[in-house]
Image (cartoon, rainbow over all chains, first blue to last red; front, side, top):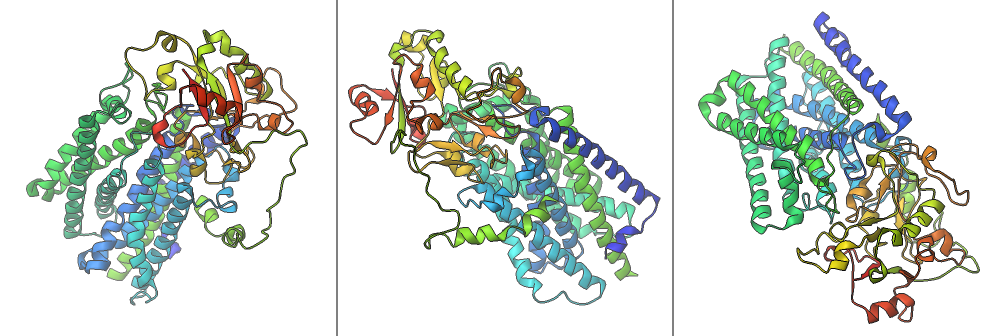
Length: 385
Length: 252
């Protein structure tokens, strides 16, 4: 089926070229990092994880969000989603690819990464994260490819695929739960030390993933002859609406526990993020923007008249995506490191090379996504004609 | 790329580990101890802060350690590497401070270092066993050659005891001690309780340079010097409530 991705108009190849340029720029910056070390980033002794790990965390959510189309279709036989499940699965593949690349660029000694397999350490959550992420990648490649191929040949997908499809549903929950466990099991980090971290991660995942999927559906409808469908987009929008409500609710649960109990080790991180601490407050405007975006999007998504207007829906989905990205891709990781365990306030901001590498990874992810979607859409157009 | 790589290859060692526990396993060996090596079940340190007045009292210990362990002097504070250093009481014990405190404790610098916890969260977090708790004497050690630089241990440590080599440290070492390895960029490092000195019968460098402020000994030996001090003095440890069981005790 890959040949479908090799045919396209000028715009298609222009887009591919643009993405390749981004990948090239990122790769150049990465070579620089490989030579100098992670010192070219804004990370420090106090804030030892930064933008890379934050993007990784956010994108695990986007990958897990794909299950929100798989589950209704395969488990509840919601037929309308037959058209879009492949888009969810392929989005998951692209997102996991980016996750793995972000882990890779964050390693101080990337050539030693196989040590994780050479010296397997089941007591480390990172070991399990490696297993669940690669497993989910594998599941989605096998499932997505075979289902699409069956559709192209106008036959039912092979029977052996069904157990894998069922397995991929709890597995999606698993990838984001294990990713949350990376953080919430650490004794000295009050911001993450909360049992609601995994549910929070999942709720924001189920908002951000399907929101991105809606935006991608809109784009596909515009640039191809395949229409993912009005009903499908509306159903996805309802999922986003519920998930973003839950995400804000979980965040408020956290806010209540932290500020009512007034335990400083837990409270100071949220104070830093939303009000600033010891005069340091670079994330404050971001965090309030995130809150505003999420609350506004709830109003627009829950209200049926605004949700059903596709122009408003597009804006709402952009707001959900941006709001959850700030929450997780900016605040979640830095917030856990500021203040430090010794209560020093060292702020973090990504540097230019760090941003270039990040853009390069996103470029690679969107390249994978474009090629996969080109294939999927190609098959859909073939089948229809 | 990473995905494909992480998928299939390297299954053999996994099987080795799963097969472990059935007699001799490849790679299990015994290290012969040196003749004069010091022995303990769990090394511990007692810091008598009553004997500390000012920063210059701690300085010899810090420089002795950093000199023999080739700890670089980084210009950029973000890239700082330190094994043992001084902190004000409020930073060393952020969960046990009061507004009104004993003046001495409030004003003196406190020596902080890796606590060589009995229950170390960093060891739990490491995905490659590059950091491990040595069974023979409880020292939390690092294998600089196995560390992949993921920095999970730094997130796990509640004491900020770990440093990461954000760049090649070698140009920043004033005088290289050829007896101890230098590190490369991209790996984590921290205090090793002078395992290399204990192996040849010497006390840790900081203890030797401490003028009686530091006492080093076996926590599990009721007759050891540290146990004598713990018996006769009230001591505190950093963030005791976390259950990590630090092996560095402070007499205040």
